[in-house]
Image (cartoon, rainbow, N blue to C red; front, top):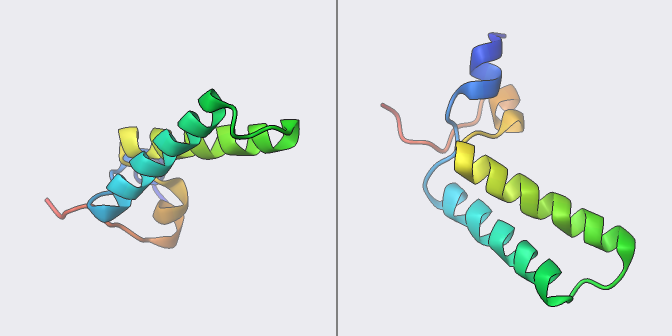
Length: 75
């Protein structure tokens, strides 16, 4: 498999992009407002927030690339 395609090709779009952005923001808000109390859960929610926002900003999901899934519009 081509590494450029695996790590750089846009494969997130539409509803999937919106969903990732929303759950990333909600996870950050949960951390900021103190809704998550226990330490292990804070790390899990922080990871969820990071992955959601990271994949929505870059419009790329590596597991999607490995599985050959794309929700992005075809150019």
